[in-house]
Amino acid sequence: MTRTPLSGVACSIARATDLFGDAWTTLIMRDVLVGIRRFDELAEDLGLSRKVLAARLARLVEEGVLTRERYQVSPPREEYVATEKGRELYPVLLALMAWGDKWYAEPAGPPALVRHDACGHVATPVVSCDSCREPLTVTDTTQLPGPGGRVGPGTRLLGPLIAARGGAEPDPGTQRR
Image 1 (spheres, helix red, strand yellow):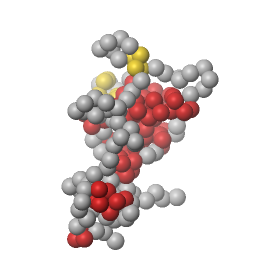
Image 2 (cartoon, one colour; image 1 turned 30 degrees about the vertical axis):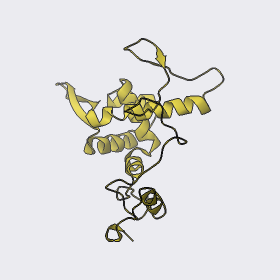
Image 3 (cartoon, rainbow, N blue to C red; image 1 turned 90 degrees about the horizontal axis):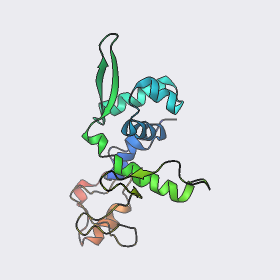
Image 4 (cartoon, rainbow, N blue to C red; image 1 turned 135 degrees about the vertical axis):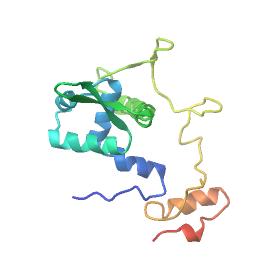
């Protein structure tokens, strides 16, 4: 089954999900960011076919999320290293991990803990406001229209809803059918 591309949807979640909505891609990034960077190690850890792994890694390199760096000259061997774009995915993965720990951890507890090296404490990741540092939740935030918002596939109802909150209707010239 062919997946519908989401790269044209006027929604940053849709566009990010277009790349990271695949479970294997997300787990590849988890492994690379934690320190498993070589193809054979990734294949062994994830238990995924080499063909699928190669395809996912190629897309991550193409998207500028990972880069290949040579670690051995003869025979030539490369490992995958997160770029700045890839490293900035880490807080997203931590938030997903915290949610999974809360709702899906086994009775023994979560499979991994995160230590904040600066203070030495085991931390629970929290998404917070960059101004006041308070946690952001669905009950205390409001989505407002942004400059790239438009009505179209994936935002036919959401676009006007968000636009109404800002007191402006989406520009009909930017609507896609």
